[in-house]
Image 1 (cartoon, rainbow, N blue to C red):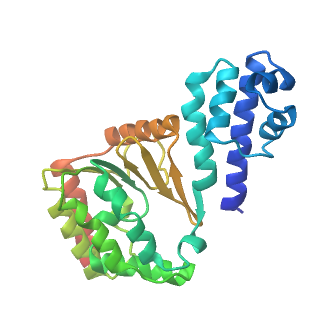
Image 2: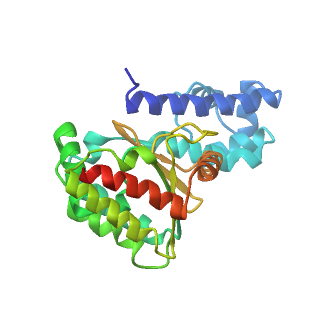
Length: 279
């Protein structure tokens, strides 16, 4: 069984504590030495090192400076924040309905200039037609026990047509065939995909089933500029802001982009799926 979001969050906090303690050891400091340099009681340094106390941003900066590793503070601060917020249980964020979840992310969508989206399971939310979204969200509502939110998802999707946004979208070919809605509705979704890919602010790549992989299929994720990556697991929403982790996702996106086909080749794969949906 997969770990719960809460146990995973605790593991992230422990990983942060281990990284901090590693800096202390690399600097040749004892726990007492570190506490003296930081101006703390020695028990505080010990609690942080054992993940008993969550360090503040200031604590992390002080710790790094004491170890001669001030250049690592920003990354560790981001990791600390992620440990507290990256895993948000679906049951909790959906308790007021999925509509609230979608509405809360509208400002993020509106301020993002460059979206990079990798879809390995369903069509990217911003490209979903109302009928496709209805079929998908109905399944989520039934499985997760959460209210529907088609209108809110459609409202959030306006960014594709409004404002100054650029979109680099990668879709696994299998996504074109997944029956998350009725055949005619899936066909309409695929036709809309063909329309959207003609927009000047959209780059759409399809990763063929038979493509030679340099990066294995990953969980679906959205990259918002170079600042944040959001993904979804079965039980949690994952938000990554640590610079090194964001760069890892962006590097994976670049590798996946090289595996994809574009233009006429992508249209051919969509047409193949469209024929299948109508058969």
